[in-house]
Length: 577
Ligand code: DPX
Ligand code: MG
Image (cartoon, rainbow, N blue to C red; front, side, top):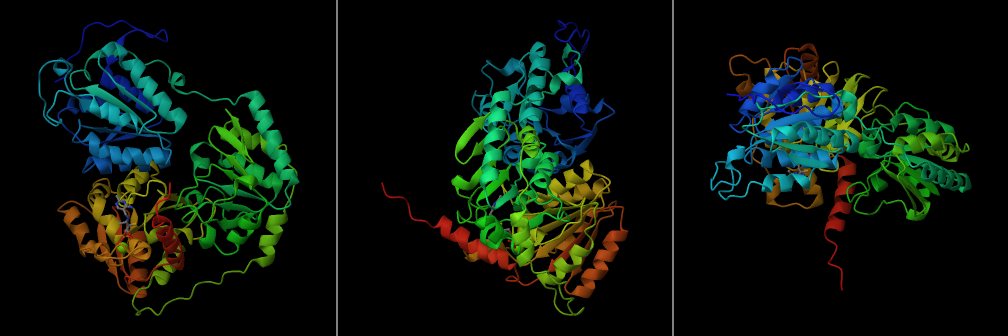
């Protein structure tokens, strides 16, 4: 039941008249380009869900649990630029927080909306269900503050438009999640009508003097360098720098490497592309060029223990130009209030050409031959599986790769121009990929969506395959069954890396029940895999899951080399005082 208040004071933007708070929110979500929002129902949000349903331009999409709901929204934001999910108080929101924190780490504007207690219970001596059983109803908002760029709790209808806009505006500006809490008795209450959409968008301009100084310093630094190289990082896309980075690359004419989590940010078919930089496990020839460069311009980079391969591959500060979303550092000097895309665009006009690193790369480049085709009846290997997956990656494909050896299998794939790559390398939550692929597929309905996910990861969030079936999404899932946590085996082995085997191909029928059209297939050799892929490509009424059975130790050599370095970094003794 919704309770419509009779009068409110119109505010802001010269807009008069009222709508409900739920309908205000729906209009804002629509205005920022969302066609869907992800939902798990609960009694604290039911009236809000009714209100959102009234907006016919938004489709409500249901998830099996709130963790999956947040990851689905995260995947949708990757495809669509922003996303929203709606959950119930505490029991729902606290689960969603893990996925929301992932969106924070991955720079994605996901808006989490949580229903919350009736305003009459705040300050009354009332214990409420789904809470800690105390009179504290603020903890959820306080927790949300740590994993969002803006967290608001609506406590009165009059404040609702201001607070909703404040949260959405911050998320879009910062490319980080935001949190909105709406009491269950306010979603249907009246507030003023939404103003124009433009009031939500803030374009940030660099400080002019700081920008000029940063461009001058960086251009001078590059000009002095004998062997400059460019490195694309994962924040390049989030902060709108892909085009300007390419302009800069073409102006310098040098070698261009990408960090693994930035794969597909610079076209792999471009003549300046030299590969993936990941220290000792870089793609062939790339590591040597980046490490012998005397100037590395890293744009939107994220150097953590994983991406520096256990701190063995961090470019020295003295040769680094680090372009962050809102500041630039040149050889240790910092220029604040300089925004990434603006800086790259301005620098492209100020640099001199120096193709030395590209010439070096080409000189030492060994042309990779085509991988051999396995005997059709031989037990399936990782190499044969990857060879066949590679063949279906076309310019319209998005390849999503889950944490585990799927990361490294994905790094090794060559992407034609137009193909996209999605990875959650900073948060690294196993299980992210199944709901994220679901959300991504909704956000990019015209693309071919291919997921590579390990057996261990799949066990966390497998249920969301049923939503792909429900919405008839023709996603192709390669489930790599190597009977365990092979990635962890390469870092540090023990009995905890063995997992219970499942009938992964069979599980699809459980989700189909009587009305679904998902396909579950198993490939134990190359012939079966080829036949399964053929079926998957022809099947458009739902997802196809292909369980690929490979040996427990059949992993990439990059995973082995990377794992041993991560193990060494993890086992460093405590520092002495
Ligand atoms: C863990 C990881 O089977 O892939 O290729 O066999 O490794 P591989 P699987 O999906 O196994 C994944 C496993 C257990 N990481 O090897 S990478 C620790 C971990 C994590 N996230 C969460 N819990 C534990 N990354 C939520
Ligand atoms: Mg595994």
